[in-house]
Every structure is written in C-alpha cells, then in structure tokens.
Length: 179
Image 1 (cartoon, rainbow, N blue to C red):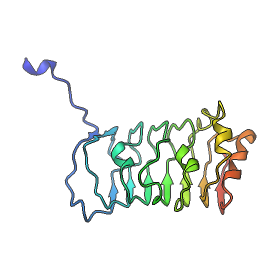
Image 2 (image 1 turned 60 degrees about the vertical axis):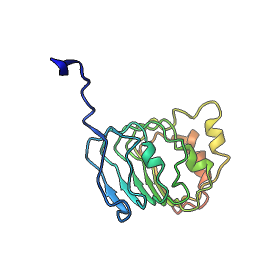
Image 3 (image 1 turned 60 degrees about the horizontal axis):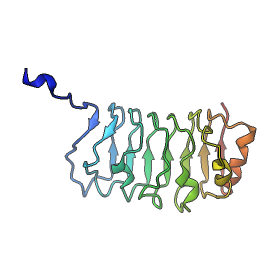
C-alpha cells in the first residue's frame, strides 16, 4: 500500500552508464527508446562519435551539448523540434545528421557560428523545417555563409521561396534536395 503513491520512474530515460571515460571515443546508443538523458550523466570526455538514432528524444540533451571533442553526431529519427543552442563541440563537429526529426527551423548555430570543420549536414525529412521562417528569421540566415561542403535536405518542403538558403553554402560540393 505504501508504494501506491510513489511515482513510476521513467524507464526510457538514460540515467547511468558505467564506462572507462578516458578510453571510449565511439558510443552507439541507437534503438534504445531513449526519451531523455539525465543531466547528471557523464558521457566519456574523449567521445568523438555519438549515435543516438531511432530514439524518442524531443531535444538534444545537455550532456550531449556539453561534449567538447565530438566530430560525428547522428541524432536522426527522433522527435527534435529545435536545435538552436550552440554546442560546446561546435568547432570540432565534422558530420551532423539531424534528419527525420520534427525540426521547425534549421539549427541556428550552424549559420550563426563560423564553423571551421563542419563538412556534412543532413536535414532531410524535416518537413516543417521552414515553419519558423517568419519575422525575419529566414532573412537573418541569409546574412551568413557556412563552410559546409555536403548538404542533404530532401523532403524538407524547401519550395522556390526558400531556395535562396542555398546561397549561404558557397563551398557546397554536393547538395541533395527533392521530395
């Protein structure tokens, strides 16, 4: 009877992980039905590749944002709507896959920060990604140039009105658009 009023713990949130934090550079937490990662969790400090695909994340966890050496991040197939806060790894990241989410706008920091290493970004299948292109947001993005060389953004409802966004990619070697 005592246990009747106790809240049921969130069973699909990642609370702890026991690893040798100095050695691990690659971590795959895909297909784990993770909806949150506890803010007190410590991911390996030398982590360079992180796969969080096919989970239930609604935001990029703060513990991921706080990583400093991340070069590859795959957070595709989640439920993320916003990714505007600049992560601590922003000058290290080389490949970012944020496809198949619920983004309402492209990650602002990719345009606002002068990212020296980001070469590939996949924004595909975020069919609401232009929803926040109001009140000058789209025009502000057009003021920036990114160093991205490969962008994939199919099924993003980028109609002719928003094709100007491609002008912010002067070094693009490949652009994959379409439906």
